[in-house]
Amino acid sequence: MIRLNHIGIAVQDLPRLSKLFKLLGLAIDHTEAVPEQGVRTHFLPILPDATGSHLEFLEVTDPAGTVAQFIEKRGPGIHHLSFTVPAGQLDSLCQQIRAEGFRLIYDQARPGAHQMRINFIHPSSAGGILIEIMEPASR
Image (cartoon, rainbow, N blue to C red; front, side):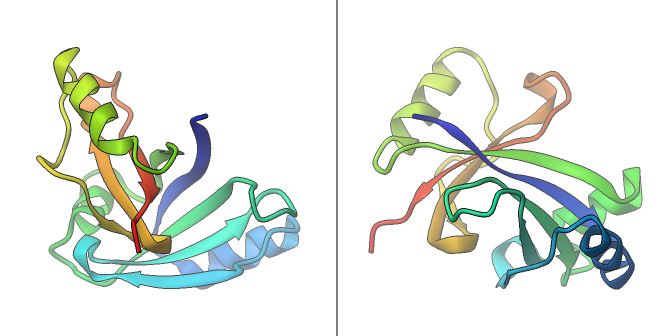
């Protein structure tokens, strides 16, 4: 079953945004650097159980990275929607997506946060929405 994993939000002022969401009852419970993406990710669970969806604050660590470019071009805000697919299904889903004429960002899945393999569906072929698809990486 495919499910919403998180909503990625590009941030410029992490302390201020964290303070606001803490007032709303949501606090960062996990932070992880993802150097390949040029960000430090900060996860805020939306639901109290571990299987629930998260907000993901994307803090820029590489000023030349794609999230930094996103902020420069569009400003901070919602960057992407992320969906988890069952383990072992990401590559075949990517093949299906390509076969149906949708554009992927990467030729092959790459490492992401939380020990996941990721790829993105390009917003130009997805109604203007950047969509991340991910699966647990094999250990």
